[in-house]
Length: 227
Image (tube, rainbow, N blue to C red; front, side):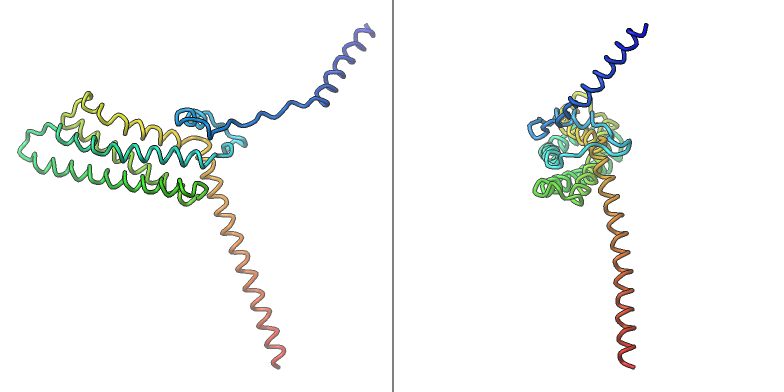
C-alpha cells in the first residue's frame, strides 16, 4: 500500500513539474486584416469578454474598412430603394399626398445614407479616432432605421416581397452594420472610450483645482512681499 502511495505521489509531482517547466504557449490572436467582411463579422460575433464587461482589443482599422464597405453599399443602392416608389399601389383619393409623404421619407433616407457614407470615409482616413467611430455608429443607426421605416411603408402600400428583392443588398448591409455595432468587441471599445473620457475629465478637474490653489498661493506671496 505504501508503495502505491509513493508511486501516486511521484506521478503527481512529475505532472506538476512538467507543467511548471513547459508552460502552455499563449494562443496568438487571429489576423483580422486578412479576413473578408463575413469572416470579420463572424469574429466579432464570437468575441467574448475578457473581464465580464469588455471585449478583446478591437482592430479599429479593419472595423473602419467594414463600415466603409457598408456605407458604399447603402449609397450605391439608393436608386433601387427609390424605384420602390413606383411600385406603390395607392387607390384612395388622397393618393398624391401619400406619394409625397413616401417621397419625403425616401429623401430622409437618402440624406442619412450620404451622411453615413461620408462619416465612414472620414473614419477610414483616421481609424483610431474615437469621435469619428462614434459618429459612424450613430449615423449607421439612423440610416438603417430610416431604411426600415421606408420599407415598412412600401409594404403597407402593396409593394410585394418579390419587388423588395431589388433592395436586398441594402437590407443585408444594415444587417451587417447591426452585427458589428452590437458585437461585444465594439461595445467594449465604446465603453472603454467613455470611461477614458470620464477619467480624463476628472483629471482635468483635479488639475484645474491645483492650478487655482497655486495661483492663490502666488497671489498670497505677492501680497506678503508687497507689504
